Image 1 (cartoon, helix red, strand yellow):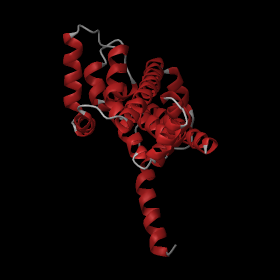
Image 2 (cartoon, helix red, strand yellow):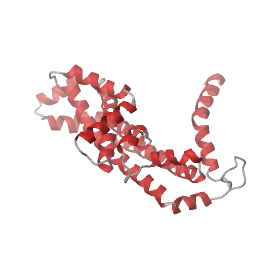
Image 3 (cartoon, helix red, strand yellow):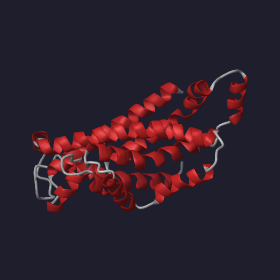
Length: 254
């Protein structure tokens, strides 16, 4: 690799990660209002764990993100395999709808979901948030897995059928092992989208069940607190752990 390529890669990764490293550094800064470095401290982490409302909002966000991404991954995997394997009326239309949901503005989906819950007299809170997050994560899972299935050899499925394998055996022993990296990628993408969603969650969260993005959004209007920096650092480390663990699972699967 020549010097220009190394410099280009260094610039890209610096551009991506420098703001995160600055945030992590200032979570240890012994100053609440000044941007000047006043010394190393852990007091903001101590205050973070004393802030019950912030911790509760973070746990609520992780709970919603975990459940919604898991359910969206299961439903999205089944939907992607169905769109890939079977022929039925309206197949092309359903494919188009999936992409429309991805590119449509979040504010449109947020208002639409709010109207849906109002029509069915659904109380805004945990259930409305979970349904909403599954709804906007599902298309991303389907597209991710369909892209993996596009390079899959259908002759393998036909050979398995000729040898007497039923649909469940074909899915569990042939299709799923081959699309497993895409399934993990869909889960991680859904988890990330759910964890940091603000616009849709703002419309459907209600007042009794508060999640972290809405909590932080209301806090930063008065300025970014070092406690938020500390919490963001912990969440970044948690995200890195999830990615590393997923890569371990993929390697073990291979």
